[in-house]
Image 1: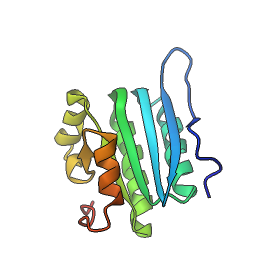
Image 2: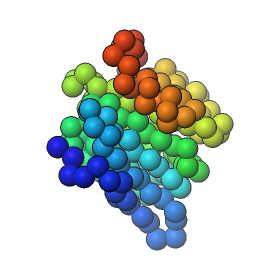
Image 3: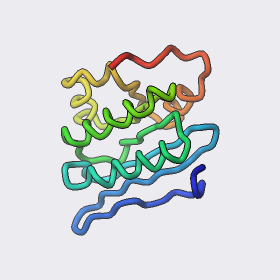
Length: 139
């Protein structure tokens, strides 16, 4: 199981404000909150945070990009890799994103059809906790 329910800063790069914080909420649900620039340089730390969540028993993962200032294709690859790890376990990943530019990246790449995207953490968690929700999109 997850070592601690407290937030854990998994990455901080010199000269940037990037952080990936993983929190186990219990019931197989974890959140990974991202702040700063999620790019090719910080992708390993983001991947570590997501792997920690999944290996800690989470089958439902909410990635909160509310405080992210930038994401790139490497970040998208990390998210796709994680959803591929979750699906065989019957799991789902959802995204919280309020930044119109970041949301547009999901739309342009059509990943908004792979990941349910919400404006608030509360809405994302409600989706993940809903036993009646539809199956995640194929991808």
